[in-house]
Length: 400
Image 1: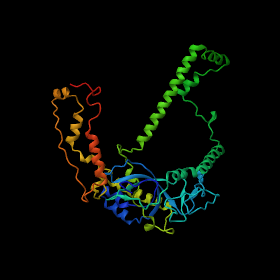
Image 2: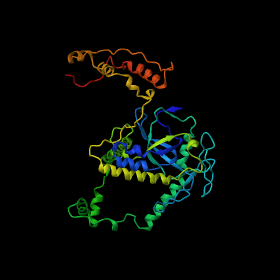
Image 3: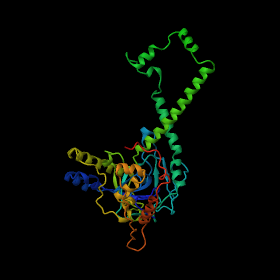
Image 4: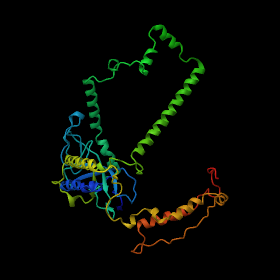
């Protein structure tokens, strides 16, 4: 299947494009340093897309997981051990005992010595191709196997949690009264401390003031229900904030986007790698550190008004993958917008409807319309129908 953006749950080969990452600086020093780099090709698993599929993008943000042929390096300060890996079939070896491998389609995986590492994901920018990505021969996993990747690390996560608890207990970092800082005079803590009861009589007075009877109980019930609804609304707002922080629509300007690795991607694994030439994911991290240092140097030399690399791919876009909305002219949009205004209001405002000229869909050069052409034709027919409430419009703002 061909698509503009690489689909998820596939294994692919990626290679860093250091020259493309510094192209927007127009800095000969940074360009020369980037050309000196010799980036390798790495085997990765496409985990999660971070952008919406829009054909006019020059790259797509992806969360990828580099695949290794060795056990994971230990990170003692985090409690990560070398056996926190999941094999990919036909590899079934695991040093910690039997662990279900990941099965791919088609099977078996072309490399017999591969592992998924725990906590080894990285965000990259995948360059879009001049045509489209063809994953018809890609090695992929179904959604059941995809969920098993995270479930396979469940025991490892529990071990890390226990390691952290033991580490906190050993360092005696559990919260206690003696670890709390002394309140400063004039602060909220000091005023709260001064208002606390200091003798038994004061404590009994506070007990007497607790709610008794049906009226106080109703008040307490209403307060608790309000607090519960407030917490639910706050959790909902927090979830929405997290979604928009991902910025799937590209509304925000990410000033760190130039540091996110820009990579080429291929689905033909055996054409670019062999079981002996798959590099260690640690080497990719070293390449990222090198290009980050080059970008920092170029940023210090660059003017303040330098634009970020938002949409600079330097390639010709396939006409079939252009946005479906490009088929509609500005007059067509204005006509559909003004048609929602009542006729008497349009007359009072002096708005004249100019119906757009009907344009017959142009067939592709092969005679049969392409995929995007069929989508555009279908969208045009659907958008041309007026909404059901056009005859009885809803409450509109106060018209002049």
